[in-house]
Amino acid sequence: MSRKVEIVARETLYQGYARVDRYWLRHETFAGGMSAPITREVFERGHAAAALPYDPDRDVVVLLEQFRIGAYVADIEPWQIEIVAGIIDPGETPDEVARREMVEEAGIEARELEFISRVALSPGAVSETMYFYCARVEAPETGGIYGLDHEGEDIRTFTLPAADAIDLVTQGRIVNGAAVIALQWFALNRERLRREWTS
Figure (cartoon, rainbow, N blue to C red):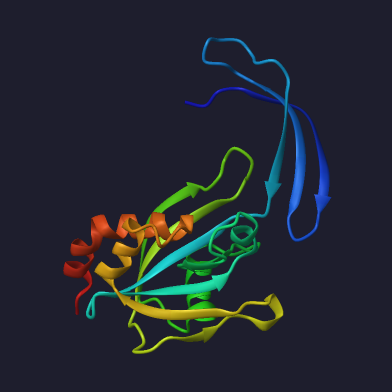
């Protein structure tokens, strides 16, 4: 059910790699009527698409590891274990981004994509949403180093047995939100995917 939101004013506070906007607004309340005026800052950086590459013939997934400044500042492990992901540029569809990023970040191509969900990652202050996919791939025997130099990317890829990757989530060793979401979905759907995707 959509409720009323009244934007009184908006101001851009910062514009760089991302943008920060300040909103003055009122919204409909559960009790009825409108809230008192409130002020909120929103981090704007666009929307993203992510994919968990899965090889059903070998029952392995392809994961990435790279340095993340946000994790470093939060005082958690800054070299995050992740899945393939990238920002959706104007004119691109989410599935096109997922396919493009798999080549750029992991050197592999998607044979099939299954849509998982669109998720608001931190809706209290960030406008970004992420489209999640699971990708059927032929996983490489060994990992490699990928990424775009002009974007400052230094990405290590590696393959892991599917069960071991799921275990990393339950052990708390994968703390990247996108990877946790995708791997938990994968844990629930792995057997079905193996049946449907095994050649």
